[in-house]
Image 1 (cartoon, rainbow, N blue to C red):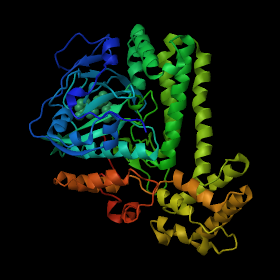
Image 2 (cartoon, rainbow, N blue to C red):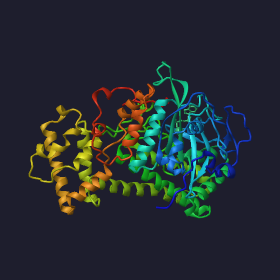
Image 3 (cartoon, protein in one colour):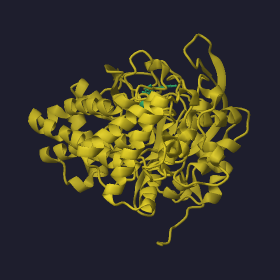
Image 4 (tube, protein in one colour):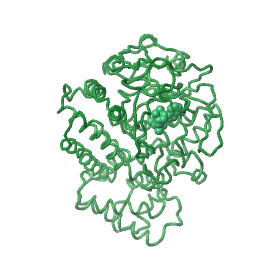
Amino acid sequence: MASQKKISRFDDLIFDNRFLRELPADPETVNNRRQVFGACYSRVLPTKVADSQTVAYAREVAELLDLDSDICGSDDFTQVFVGNRLLPGMDPYATCYGGHQFGNWAGQLGDGRAINLGEVVNHRGEHWMLQLKGAGSTPYSRNADGLAVLRSSVREFLCSEAMHHLGVPTTRALSLILTGEEVIRDMFYSGDPKPEPGAVICRVAPSFTRFGSFQIFAARGEIELMKKLLDYTIRTDFPHLGEPSLDVYLKWFEEVCRRTAEMIVHWQRVGFVHGVMNTDNMSILGLTIDYGPYGWLENYDPNWTPNTTDAADRRYRFGNQPQIAFWNLGQLANAIYPLIEQVEPLQQAINAYKDTFEQGWQTMVAAKLGLNTYDPAIDNELNTELLILLQLVETDMTIFYRKLALLVMAVELSDEALMTPLMEAYYVPGQITDDYKARLGNWLRSYIRRVQASGIADAERIKTMNAANPKYVLRNYLAQLAIDKAEHGDFSMVNELLELLRHPYNEQPGKEAFALKRPDWARQRPGCSMLSCSS
Ligand code: AMP
Ligand code: MG
């Protein structure tokens, strides 16, 4: 293993703030809310807080920054990552972007409660942007306070790391720190505002640039500025594409399409519902970004969304995510059109989304079933029938796929005998009728025959399935239990879940309680099945 230089003094971190250096700044430095024209960002300082306390940190993210684990437990760490102490080389700023929210153009949004501290360069020469979320208002805060509450910060911190360990592209989270200050929130916009503990997380990613970062300039006719941002983006984050040119713009857009498709395939694989796929929440690197009212499918239901703000239209429901990503890419294409001025090649590039998604989806479905290839002639029907079965009775998606690996591969067994390993996945056993048993039995036999015809050894089937079907995900009620404890000053469950979710595909003896289906009390409890954008 290459020797790694560890940093044990914060002042030794090296910053190289390319975004600041190479893109135009807002000349105004007073921190008031405003429309910012002709600039990619505004300098702004984090708001200092009096009484901060670190709840948790992710050692793998500290490692990305070369930080020695000793200093992660220090008071210095807390002061730096709550925004109280600036390190040499940090130069904080908030970026300008716009976006389509729930299908409608919303104008300028921007980092309303995110403040970039700077880009750390690690010993491998990688640039990692540090970004505080909840560290106070910025010129982009509109009518909100720039703060974040503990509950939403626990959710973002844990889920970013859980997603990473699941193999899903995502922004990372270094730290979760209580500010010691109260933040007023009306959790369900029901006219019942309450004080909640405030928190700051430090997010880490190569770049936080969004589809909306380009859209805002297109909407304002600031085409030269958009070109600057695109040239910069290509040079820094897509250098393998070559020097910016018309051809490279198209290649860039095609790559954004491909990366987005790959991300969505992963979401559908693990049962993740983002909840707010607005174009300002779409990363140009194809990373899952902005964890708000997201949720994990418990019973398989393509119509489910956890976001109560979207309850009427369910625009961002699980089953709609692939189409929404495509729509969002269409908006990005519209934005960059003035730099291309031809529809045809943009259309071709956007087809890369459909192709990559279709290919990736087939490979993903095959892996979930332990098959080495997806044969549309057989597997379209096999998978369609399975997805119907999963909805006929309330069936836990994660448990069902994980337990399917334990199927006894013998077609002569009775329906009931075949179903035995799957029984844990059912929420309401009373829903299981004789008809259902017969239909599932038929499906299981078709599946067994499909596996046998393909000649896959059972050990290989199980191995493939267990690498595609996690045992542990951040179930909605688990996150809520960790939040309940953290709000009472007990951070043990946040840290326990962080540890558990480092190895989501491993059995982890002794931890089975975290793999059980949602308990009945969590079915209607706010925070467990229902969330709003209030955070
Ligand atoms: P979201 O839907 O959470 O991604 O947020 C949409 C926009 O609202 C972004 O520009 C956020 O920065 C901004 N925003 C959300 N919450 C706050 C807050 N508490 N204070 C300031 N801006 C916020
Ligand atoms: Mg956002």
